[in-house]
Amino acid sequence: MLIFHRVQDLIKALQNLRDHSIGFVPTMGALHEGHLSLIRASKQENDCTVCSIYVNPTQFNNSEDLIKYPRNIEKDCQLLQSENCDILFAPTDAEMYPQGFHAELIKIHFGTIETILEGAYRPGHFQGVGLIISKLFNIIHPTRAYFGLKDLQQCFIIKKLVSDLSYRIELRFCPTVREKDGLAMSSRNALLSDEARQLAPQIYQTLLQVQKALEQGYSTQGAIHFGKHFLLQQKEFQLEYLEIVNFETFEFLESVQKNTKIAICLAAWLKNVRLIDNLVFELR
Ligand code: PAF
Image (tube, rainbow, N blue to C red; front, side, top):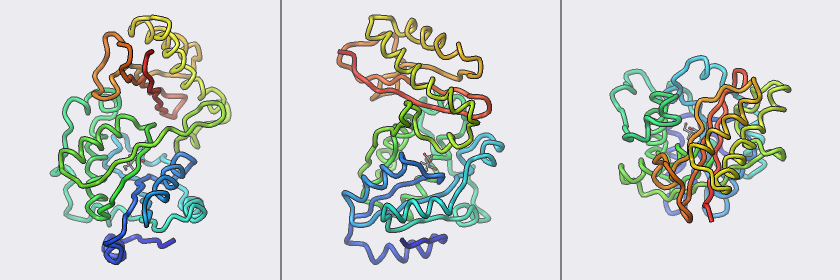
């Protein structure tokens, strides 16, 4: 695996691959099976797979969260090597945001989508994601880019970015990978204490409860109420949101129609760790 830390070195190396397909997997490191499933998907359909590891400061609205974000570049390199990833791009902050770069001057807005759910609780987050992904797309010019559906709203934002800015990139959104007990894989899981780790699968259980309630004919409000009650039986959780949205448009749903893809989205703090998850399904 070739490793690059500088933009210009990566660009030079990719110039030799112009006639080849390039699959791109952007990450913030602390890699887990979810990331590795994206690498595998990319390896299957591209000549060359590039993974980036960069903890992007412009998408953190909370400086403590940025400092705490798990980092383990050595283990990440080993995992990528074992998946035969071709190129790792691991830039420094100075490389991505050099002196004189004014992130606040380049603001990419996504409309109301950035004011709900994650957007409401992490103001500026999606603008930071849009900025870094645009920069990485411009550096790498991938044929295809791979994202995990665990960050469902991020997938929607990236789709909008590619469409609004006319990127000629095929997007692939891959299923959430879960631990045996249902907990969605996330780099942040590494921050959970043993006790919190035991409780964390309740998040997925809550999503399943809401799904069950909808299938039993509960209204959306009724199902949400039921789900909140279920999760908050455990005093350690602090719920930020539990909502039911249309999977295609991300609009909140007053009621759920049959044969419409819906997503139940949840964000909660478990002690001092923020976890998100979602469940996508169609009512039959
Ligand atoms: O999902 C992530 O890890 C990040 O938001 C991404 C897409 C790598 C941008 O920094």
